[in-house]
Length: 249
Image 1 (tube, rainbow, N blue to C red):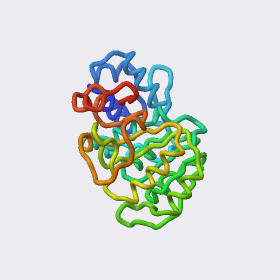
Image 2: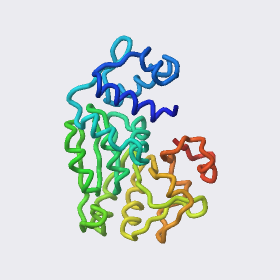
Image 3: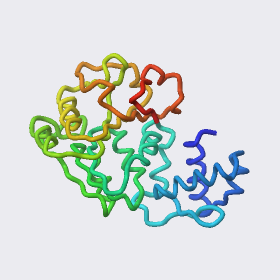
């Protein structure tokens, strides 16, 4: 069983019973207790449960309920949102642009997340507002109702004022030949502005976007350090994007 499915089972079991043990989960999932222990360590570190001797218990007072976090786990964006979490370190400054996958990242943030997030994604703002230790800076500009983002010259100018540790980029399309491309010119312009101020770029995209292209070029693959998809990192569908400087998660 893949790790994401084990996570879903563990969280679902906690919702039903309030507590789980390594031995019971090992039997339920037909994996070793060492595997379960690593899974629980990961979920504990990301604020989704509390580790106790021999297992785990439900964690109270998380900004989002377990039900909120598990309802859509089967969807690609939720898997991607979960995979991103180890890349986010306490105290980081982070660009986060538009898209529902970016919003999924917020749904998996641990309760103690401490970040400075600069974003043009208006749908993201209320999600981040639930976290007391996240400083949210909203870029101005023209509000696009279809994408729920601020775009335009002002957005790009304000993005250019920042240097950040990490840029989580939602993507419309990614291909070996054309790199990252955008469907909307203004969205592409914002991405380019954020790229310039980012020390590390992480692209988030489901497998349907691999091999696809859109009209507006954002950057080549050499500009990004990490690609996060819902697929296992060794999936053959990702082979065309493998090269020495790109880590695939």
